[in-house]
Amino acid sequence: MLEPQMTPTVMELLLRACLLLLAALTFVDGSETKLIVREDEDAILPCSLGAADISSRVFDWKKDGRVEVFIYDDGRYYGKGLSGQHEQFRGRVFHFPEQLKGGNASIVIRKSKPADSGTYACIFPHEQPERRAHVELIVGASPEPFITLNKTDDGTLLRCAVRGAFPKPEVVWKDSSGNILPAEEHFTENKGSYDIILEATVTKTDDYRCVSTQQEIHHQIYTETHVNVFKGAAPKPAIAVKETKDGLLLQCEVYGASPKPEVVFQDSSGNILAAEPQVTERGGSYDVILETTVTKSGDYQCVATQKEINHQISTEIHVNVPSGDSDSTPWIVVVGVLVVLLAVAAVIIIKYKKTWKKDKEELQQRKKHEEELQQELNEQKKKHEEDLRQVRLLLEEGKQQKEETA
Ligand SMILES: *[C@@H]1O[C@H](CO)[C@@H](O)[C@H](O)[C@H]1NC(C)=O
Ligand SMILES: *[C@@H]1O[C@H](CO)[C@@H](O)[C@H](O)[C@H]1NC(C)=O
Image (cartoon, rainbow, N blue to C red):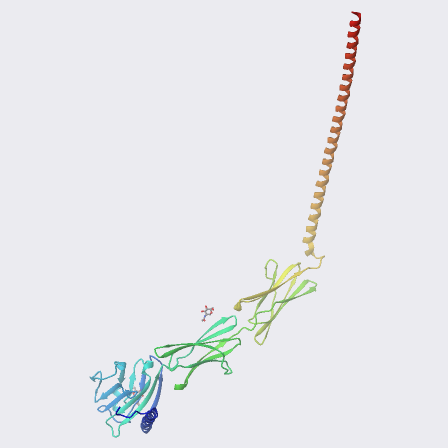
């Protein structure tokens, strides 16, 4: 090799020297502007040569020291008499012709893209000394964060979305005291800009803020939301019973519920009993007391419902209204009916028993009669047989006598 190899250190030194020179130039000119625009917005890059009329002069806009953005030369420019514009800027960059007389050499880049981000130089090459100004353009500054809320079993899920941001912002959730909340971040990069989604679950009622910060460009933007976190599903209602002259007073108590529960008394058929709840609020949660007087024995329940959180809880109680009341009548009726039924049953049984006995007696009599008859027949038979024997004997005797005489 002919050329001596440059060590990285030498390269670095050279680079630094160049940067210093550039900085010195910028500083000399005193115009270093930082411009932050969102993607698709128009970016006006400012440049001016005092009050001088520049309509017959030359000015040149370059990006990052080499890319040709725009040239104006005495009424001619890219797209009109001049060529050489980088295709990234073709048809997108315009100057302000009517302002040239006032020294205005600004340009506008239409529908800026993150790729347009960079350092632009506005150069007057023929001035003595050469004049230049720099504009740092950043496209894709974080747009306003977009917040959605979702109720979950654990609380409220806060979701913050920052889309099309460049450079990549740091996105955080903060409570009203400025504490950063633990959160889960998902991001995707798309054509040089970032989509960020940050999720946090909160369990307290508060104002929450999603803050998007782009340190590099000193850009910060936030969106705030108020979250009502329901502290408590209603506990099981407590029922107390008191005897009054009008009947039984049932008192149902539900303490420390949030959101405010709807509390009702129901009888065993599900009918809601008339009652006016007394509600007191304590730091966002509710105490409800409900009283009703009942005059009938039976099952009653106190039901607390929180529709917002789909929660319902109840306590059931059986009450016996003291007897002697007109209300005990149904029981008396029931007992009466039972007694009558029993009596009827008894009568039927007795009657049946009687008939049965009679039948049995008749049967026995008939049997006895039959036996007697049989006995009589037997006796007659015996008698007949005896008679027959007698006759036979007589006949035998007669025969013998006949033989003897013969
Ligand atoms: C140049 O003109 C543009 C467009 O009218 C304007 O926005 C800008 O402020 C002007 N710049 C100067 C330095 O006058
Ligand atoms: C809220 O949660 C439900 C159930 O998990 C889900 O289907 C829905 O997409 C969520 N909505 C938002 C905005 O996150």
